[in-house]
Length: 123
Image 1 (cartoon, helix red, strand yellow):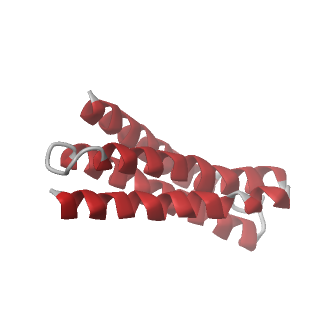
Image 2: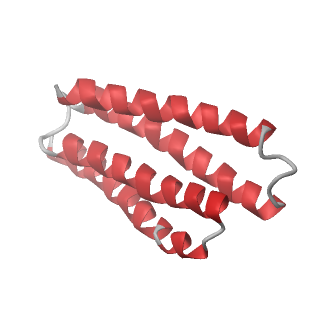
């Protein structure tokens, strides 16, 4: 059950990252400053990397000690929503306060990777 959830979640986030990347490359060029395009690109890259990490979590779920894979997948999901989500919000609204949320997503990414590490060490 957990594996399927993370496969669906990771696949959906990867799909959306590709769509966002294409949107950024074609629809946003000339409409955003170079700095805001770079912020958008960072959001897309981290989303794709951690969508793949969620898929990895699904594959490792049966190999790593519980509950660490579930924690990792949940933390990667939260990281995408907070990190990439706050950067997308910043780009589209111009509200700089969204940038204050971004480090929380980064911490969730780090904690997710730590959960993978701990799960591997305890297996």
